[in-house]
Length: 68
Image (tube, rainbow, N blue to C red; front, top):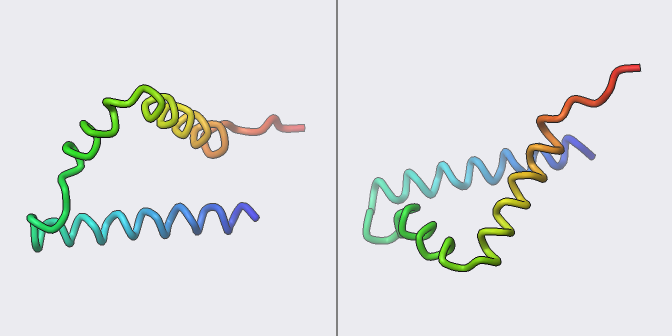
């Protein structure tokens, strides 16, 4: 199951890279990340959700389980 989750994040990363390439090729078709983040960060609930998301990522991928 962990492989499926990791594969999902890899796919999201690849899609993000494709979006960056698309933005470099035709800049008018894709909003800049800074513009999107400025818009999203105006909402308090969105900021809270982003913090929770980063906490979840850190907890699941950066915390080392205890060794027996």
